Image (cartoon, rainbow, N blue to C red; front, side, top):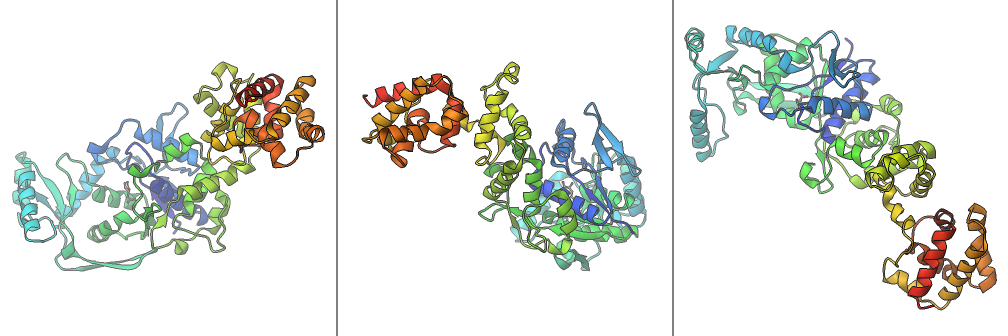
Length: 494
Ligand code: GLU
C-alpha cells in the first residue's frame, strides 16, 4: 500500500513553528517513501475562525518549500483552489458526510444523542471536582432509547451526539515513536462527535476524513496522544482499519518549557519577516526532534528526504534554540551569491527608510556594499541595515568611553592628521587608495599596529569594531572622510 500522509492544520491566523515541523516530517516521510503528502484544512471549530487564515497558511507553507500537490492550493490570483480526487479538502465543506457517518454510529448503538445543557454539565463537573475526581461526562443520556431520542430531536430539542465508549476496556496501539501505548476507557470521556451547531468535532471529522482520504500514517504533535485511544475505538466502531500513529515530541524552549507565543517569535511568519531563509529555517526545524544517522546538521531538502526515518525521531521534547537557528541561518547567508543576497536585502533598506522605492536603482551599489560588509556577521536579513548609520551623516561621535579613550592616546592626533592630509591630496578615494593608505600613514608617522588602526577606525566610524577598515574608507569616500576627520580633530582639541 503506498504511503499517504496529511498535514491537517486548523487555520488560527499564524503557523506555529511546531506546525511547520509536523508538516515537514509528513512531507519528508512521504517523499522518502514515494508517497503522497496532502494538506487538509480543519476548520470545524467555528469559534476560532480567522479571516484570511487559510490563504496565509498556504502562503507560509509555499514560502517554506513544504509543498503539497493535493489539497487546497493558492491560485494565481491568491484564490484557494482544491486539487485532488479526495476533496473537498476543507472540513466545513464536508458537513453532509459527517452527519451521514454519525447516523451510522447511532444506528449501530456506538453513539447516542445527548440532551444535557451547559448548565447541567457544569454542575456535574463541579461536583466531580469537589470530590477529587477527574471531570467527565456522567453518562446521563446514555440509556435513552434511540427511538425516544429521535422523537426529541424531531421536536427540535437541542442535542449533541456522543461516542458510546465501552466500559473498562483496554485500548492499545503501537505508536511509531512512543511504542505500545495503552489506555483504559474508564479514563476517557464519551466524546462529543457532533455539536449542537451541526458541525462535527475534530475527533469525528479527523477519523472520517483520514479514512476516506486513504491516510496510512497519522504524523502529528504529542498533544493528540491522549485523544488517540478514542480515535482507535472510532475506527473499530466503524469497522475500518486504523492508520499507523506517529506522535512527535513537543517543541520546548531553552528553559525546557512548551514553546509559546508569549516568549517571542514562534510563528513562521515572524521568521519570514525578520529575514530567515526558508532553507535554513526548515533545516533547523527538522533537527528539533530528529537527527539523521550520520548526525549531519546542514542539509538540503533532498538530503533530508534521503536521510529521514521515523525511528530517529526522539521521544523526548526537542529544544528550539534561536541562537542555533541564527547560526544555521548565518551559514546559509554566508554561502549566498552577493547579488542574490543584495536583492533579498533591498526591502529591509526600504522599510527602514534608508532607501526610497524610487532610489533602488541609484543606490543598488551602496546596498550591495553594505550587504557585502554584513554578509559574514548577519544572523538574519533585517540585520543588514545595522551598519547603515555608520555610513550616513557628516560627523560621528565615539560610541562609548573606550572609543573616546582611543582617540586620546598620544599617537592619535598625528595619525588622524596625517590621514586627513593624504585624503585631501588624493583625487578620489577608491579601492587602490583605501588599501594602501594605512601603510602610507605608517611610513609617514612611524606608528604601527593597534595604535595606528584603532584611532583611524574610531575617528571615521565612531566605533572600535566593525567591518573591514579598507571597505569603510572606500565606502565613505573623500568628502565624508574629510568632514569626519576634521570633526574628530576638533573633538580631541587638535
Ligand atoms: N487540526 C489539528 C491541529 O490543528 C490536527 C491534528 C491531527 O493532525 O490529527 O493540530
